[in-house]
Image (cartoon, rainbow, N blue to C red; front, side, top):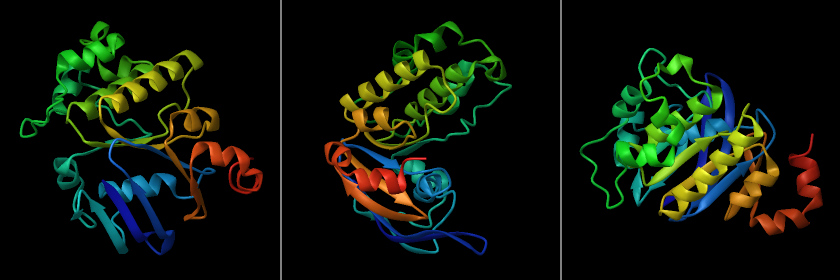
Length: 233
C-alpha cells in the first residue's frame, strides 16, 4: 500500500532523514521505533506532505505522492493523527468531528458520526463540550475520531499514548486494534516498547534519521544488541 524509497528530508539546512526506505502492506500495523529525535515524526510528516522530501520516492497504492500538499495526500486516502493533536479548541467535539468529514469519499466501511460515537462513548457524552475543556485522553480520542471521519485507508499515528494515564492507554490500544481489524492499515509511532510490539505485524528501528533494522516483533525480542544500541535509554 505504501512504499518509501531513499527519502531525504531537510529542515532548512539540517539533514533529518537519510535515504529512508520502508514499506507497509495492506491491512498491516507497522511500527517505527527509536529514541526521541531520530526522525520518526519527520517520517510521517514527510509522507503526509507537511515536510516535503528533497529527494526520494513515496508511493501510495501505486501513485507517486512525494511533493503533494497535505490536503491532496489526505484526499487520496491517508489520514494523520499528530502527536500534538491539533484539535480546534473553540469548537465543540461534534463540530471538530464534522470538520473531519470528506463527503467525496465513499468507502465500503464508511465512518459516520454515529460510528465514531460508538467507538468513543466518552466523546458522545462530551459532544457539546469545547475542545479546550477536554482531558488529554479525550483530546487524543477526538483526534483519532476526527481522522477516521475522513475514511482513510492508511492511518499515520504519531505517539498516541504520550502523556496519558494507563487506563486511557488501554482504551487507545483497543481502539487501534479495532480499527485495524476493520481493514484499516496503520503506520504507528509508539515509544512504549511492550505496547508497540503487541500491536505490530512488523517493526522498523530508526536511529539518526536512518532505518537500522526491520523485522517481526518476535525477532526483535531476540535482538539484544539492536534493543541496547537503538532503543534502551
